[in-house]
Image (cartoon, rainbow, N blue to C red; front, side, top):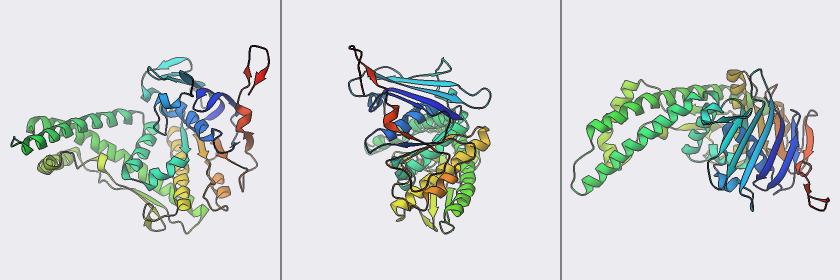
Length: 373
């Protein structure tokens, strides 16, 4: 997949922005506050249909405007989308269209414009609480297997209902009431067991693939890194999972929430033989985060048959200067890399086209016939 052109209107701090990339690897240069991360966010928006930063549409609309629009022109394998448009407003639903046809379900977009993105906020995703690491896997799997969206939604809906029953039981027990409704709880547990085991299986397969790839990539950057990634939940049969959920009812009833399943699974990130969140420096955490995304780019390329667009926002910040050249050399062959930075990188491959972000801002034509920027 190649991003030929990206146009933004009233998106974040960009009033009218147009970048003609022509599918080339690009170094997007701009000072802090110039909107580089916002540009990366917009590029990812046409891939996953939502902000990877978790922002609502009202947060994406430029101050003083009522709506935003992001338009991408693309090229890829036969049958791949040629154009994707995303529109959002202060009020009303988000609208997505592919080649002019409206997309009503997120699953109909996911995987069609594969991207991998890294931003400053992503360092905390793998180095923070387990929920962030699980979310990283889920977003990746939604691109790889759009049907995964359905399994995840079904699981979360059943989890909400079982937790409701447990909370009601806890409230009744506190007031001298009875226990959980066994029949209704068993019905939700059947769904949790079936969908939860499938989620665990797919997450574990992805982690195995990423573990193999990140170890090899790390060796090419620095043989002493000893990188690893593992999924901490055992893959078992739906019948066994259902038995465990049933056995856990008394304990879960005392707690008021479900203690077993993929929503509680560990995802272990390791560097130099230690957990990433066990005192790794900011530089090492950033390096690990970028390498995981480059490993994911390889997975997307292999499974989808379409190299993803690799979006790296300010990757050199807080990194050992000797690493950036090695990292960019690891971008999968065939992938278009778009890298942002405040200044020219310490080392940059010759194939990168340098584009100041200010050159993307379209001049505004005023009534008198003059222009302003």
